[in-house]
Length: 110
Image (tube, helix red, strand yellow):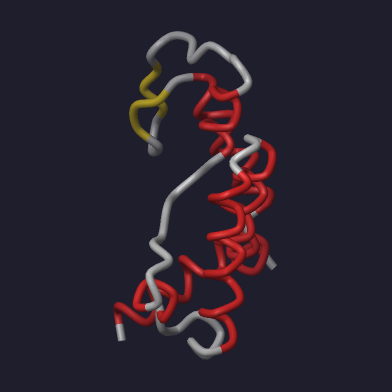
C-alpha cells in the first residue's frame, strides 16, 4: 500500500518533471518522462503501479532549482530555513515554483 501511494504521488509530480526537462532542453529525458506518465497513468491505474520502470524507462527527478542552474543562475549563500532545512536562494525559489506547479500541492490546498 505504501509503495502504491509513493508511485501515485511520483506520477502526479511527473508533469512538473516533464516541464523542467523541456525548459532545460533535455528532450530525451522529456520523452522518457512523457512515456512514464502515459504508461503509469493508463496501465498503472492512475499511477498506483510503476510499469514504466519494468518496461525499461527509469524514473529521474528534476526540479526548477536545477532548471535555474542550467540557465546559469548562481546558487547564492548557504541558508538554513526553519522547517525546510538547509538550502540556498536558487533552490528555495525552485522549491516554491515547483510547489505552485505541482498538482498534488494544488489538490492538498483545496
